[in-house]
Image (cartoon, rainbow, N blue to C red):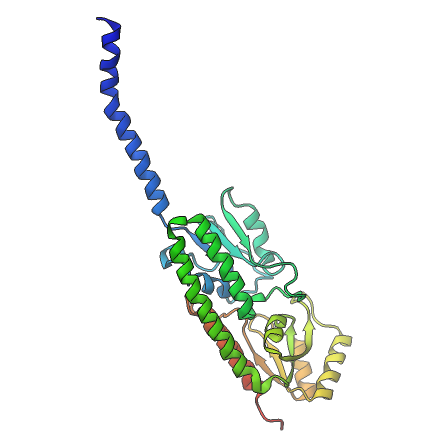
Length: 297
């Protein structure tokens, strides 16, 4: 047979298969584009913000249990596997969540890891930046932009949800500002330095913290300074946390007749979800105000 006739005949037999392959590839690509992201967030306050922007099916559980300190926690193997499911992971960074630094560094290439904490926020060296809802708005903007970049087909929906979340955060800021107004001049001491952003935003009168971190107990000199400051200002509130209630705080309370009140910046008893951040902030404010607003004996 003439080869010039045979070749087109073979091509004609291969053409349908080639078209089918192209169609399958195109369909798979479109399915991949349509598949939701798998989004992870490190701790409950951040998880609560992200939950307002993505569908429930796309959001993994918080990487760190809210009952655990992000400074001192070892991931279980099941949690490490959970981490590897994520397309993108939002966290505050190693200053706060040092336990995640090594697992995140070991993730496969292509996983996006986004730190939402600058080294110094407005001159405040405190990684608990979510306790300022105005700074939470900045985080929401960055989260929304990242999600839109990774999932451009849903960019409009991310923007719409972010706009609504920003409105809710504005309302929360105004609400908390009004709630704190009557107790702004009331002095208090915290167990560790975790509230600088809250204090700065709402003009609260913190005398200081017993320690900058939870790694070590305060010394006798620091305790003496805090006791003198409390006696001088008639401070009657000491704020501890579920994850950190040092014995030194109880000693200071017994020496000054101040109340020890547990406040929770991590939301250890709060159910994850779109309202978690708002519940956390309102509960924390209510606990502080319940002590600061009590009349002096």
